[in-house]
Length: 303
Ligand SMILES: [Zn+2]
Image (cartoon, rainbow, N blue to C red; front, side, top):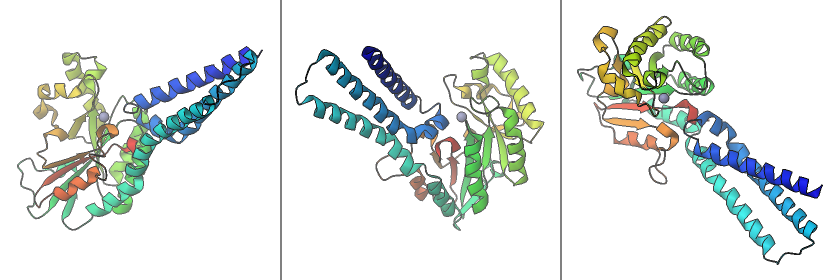
């Protein structure tokens, strides 16, 4: 009977740790899940550790063996180190990806020297006003519609305009759910783009991907006028299709074609901290009058 309890306890610990490790490794692809799970990592780790400690004592009891004195402090130290190691990713997010930090950044953008524009206001012949810093704020909507709405709510509050690029095949939202949000954004004066992933859809088949690009663009255009696109990044490098797309016929351009002087991005959630104390938003300070600044924010990272 005691052995069964020991086996169950050790099994629980093992599964919990496999889950924690998997979750931390996969943080890029499953940002929403990862961030939603952040507050639970440390308690889960603690309970897994507690299960190991209880089962160890049960094993000692079964064998009627009294361990050397240093065992208990050793187990305790390992437990503390494991728990502290989970604080690191949590701290990274808690300091840098707060919606309040984003709100502060929006306040900065409201200052006189900046002019925040829709992507459709970009002038490809570089004839923008030389007295302003031109800001093009972009959201690639990878995973969470709710998190996008958190960001949009702040932008509406601060009267800042942005362009959101929607996917048709997100792992976390069905396109039909995005339609009312797209219409809401349009009614609030925001702009919509297409976040394409056609090479991923066709598993690398270029010809099929080109067909699909036109089809999906038209599908989106049933709901909203689309002029600008951006590619979704994954192992199929969707941007490879871009040189082959007939831009004139389809009347589209890519956000990556913008001649930008400064590019600020939270891609992968990793670029936020270049070195301690430096936030990617600090890059804005380098902008001079007449500069074009493109800012890419993935709402999935922000909480
Ligand atoms: Zn993407």
